[in-house]
Image (cartoon, rainbow, N blue to C red; front, top):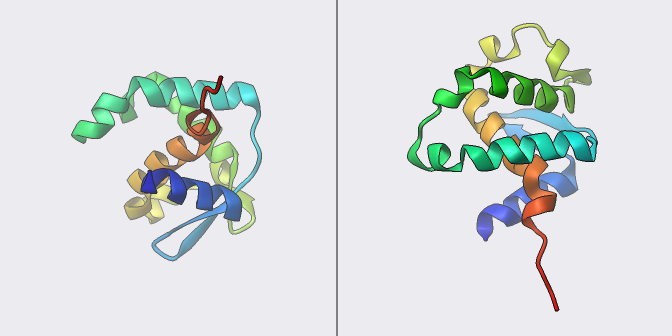
Length: 114
């Protein structure tokens, strides 16, 4: 549950800080969130075992674009930042794994009540 609290705090702050760099979150649509959530749930086992081979799959490339389109870095859209992760490769895995959870959070926090 601590992990979900951390994700909630990132959402409340509308930013994620990694290695002193601040990534600002912008809103996304339900449709885009669903695509990310579906992908995130499909790679859960891989993430748990530390298998990041999905990063070279074509399906992932669409997800990465959706994520980087919704994040600002130094007031510019991350997608348009030339070679951002070439400059900061140490941010990449933490950024992607955290953003998968951040975008999926609305689906993860729900509870069924009767």
